[in-house]
Image 1 (cartoon, rainbow, N blue to C red):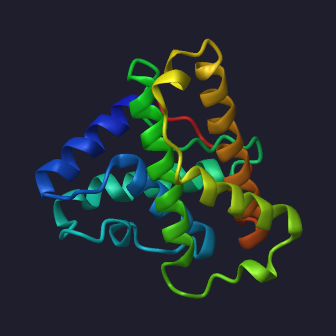
Image 2 (cartoon, rainbow, N blue to C red):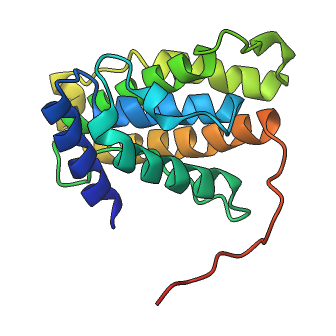
Image 3 (cartoon, rainbow, N blue to C red):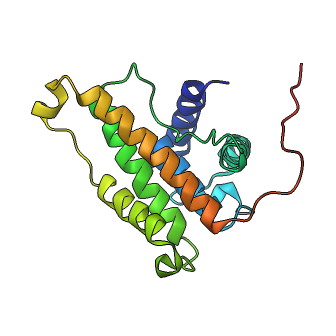
Length: 181
């Protein structure tokens, strides 16, 4: 299942459940929670509705997220709308993803930013600023807007992995994933 398919399925499930959360915000929250405690139940990432109907999807999203975060090749990717979506929608989704991530980090109340390295603390500060991102009409028309957005997504992707690696020990087990045919 592609990232776009997962995003669409989660978006539909959240709407059907009556949630006001977006797929990106939900994934950001889940990712932040997993950075603190990788045993976290994924239903906690949806806090405005009963997530019973979303259990299977959230369990799968949790596993995909953990695979990416623990992957030695650093394959984690934030769940965001695909490139066919408007730039404004993608920037808004990235901002909500970052807000969700920060909420997820602080969900249990035991996140201690002062205990982080200076570099990782700076990333948390940058994600805080990105959670407020908006796209103006002038920026949307700029030729560099797409490239700027791609750079921001890559910064978030790598920054989140750095936060995860600092907060979580390495996972025990095989270093390669089996392929099912």
